[in-house]
Image: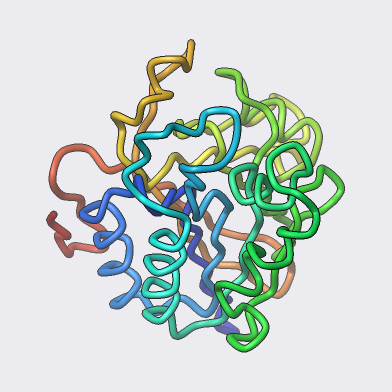
Length: 237
């Protein structure tokens, strides 16, 4: 059997509001598993000081967030794909950042994505990254049925955005319309969680094997408490 491609997806890190212990568990697992490709599902940055929820009491500057994200990217040795999320999109949104400043604040420029040879996917509903028969997106739907909504739009899809963990499979065409909503790696007590009517945030990530046929075996990891076990090995915060 030909070796399948190994892919790991990290959702919604929100540097500046990230959970070091959760993120380090994902990195520790990948150090052993050795993914061929790392997919960052967007909202890698929190952009805490920009946007309609910006606070004058923000604890991290945008420069802080870029520094944290650069340190993280330095730890990744595999091929990396960076999907822009709605939080990164703020940095090129005319409502929040004047056009003459957008180039200075660009994610690609400040995270040196071209030099790192990291593929960048913009946050648009007609853009995604595809591995085999699965599409990877940040996510656009916010309600409690997000996995279903994204699957009905994109087919087999892995996404973040809602900070929840779900999966969806219809009774028909299950091989074409399966949705995986894989949680987040940020803190679970962020200010705007209180405004999230559905709540139910959960930390996690996902990994999978992709075969030349396009088929895949895909696994969601939910972080409950201080440890999880994969393939007989315990990973602990």
